[in-house]
Image 1 (tube, rainbow, N blue to C red):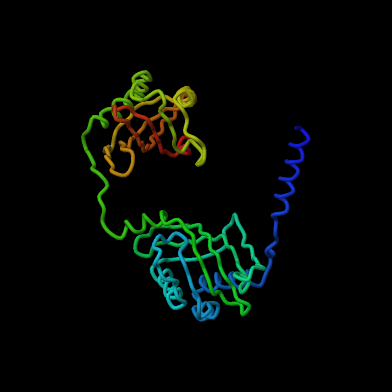
Image 2 (tube, rainbow, N blue to C red):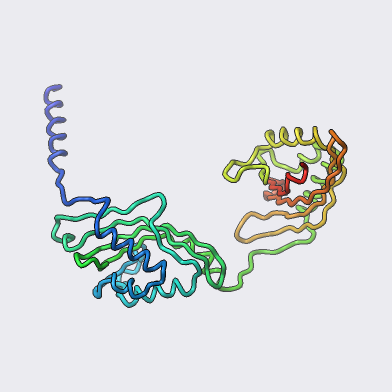
Length: 310
């Protein structure tokens, strides 16, 4: 039985290897890739004549995420019009190779695909909305078909439409919840921050959940927020060097959003005395406090210039 199983395994492996069949060659450097790069340059420099010369008269373009089975291919004229529209309605519009990818050129032996060289490109499309000011940096994948006359005759574009959502929404006025000048969550923030002024740290932390997160300018951009215990340690180190003279609220509002977590935003005038030399410093501090449904703070973000304490 063992011999039979061994022979069967060998036969399966031989069968798998026998199924391999070469159907072309992949190039990292190729004239067809140069054509695509020339197309990028023509778009970025707004050279419409050069761009038109790089696109074949029988060009066909497709959207890889198009769900309409009856959608017709984009023509050369429509492709050029689309590029012109992007340049007109957006500022600083560019198309380039992606920083984390590079194009491949493929010459197929299969007759169905052998009439052109296929360039599989990883791109980024960038710009600023001309009317909205919304910035987009859109990665996309495009399959180009390049003829032996160095013209692009086919393109299929795959890209995520979600980055454009903010730009679409910004074309009109949209409400996103309500603003409160007085609210129980505002009261919670005021009581918590005034507790620091009176060195009542137990009362301060009563406002937070056990899993609350703490972040702000004291943290690097890509670092995770601190948990409660780590923030306590950081806060105790700070209070060992400074005495809090006062926490005075200059402005506070509660934002109840439809599209994201609700939070209280507040500006504070904070007076501190450095214990080493009794120097008094006044600093402005901006707080954002996020809440859960039970009225407990789940996240604190504090923004202030630490250089003012030097």
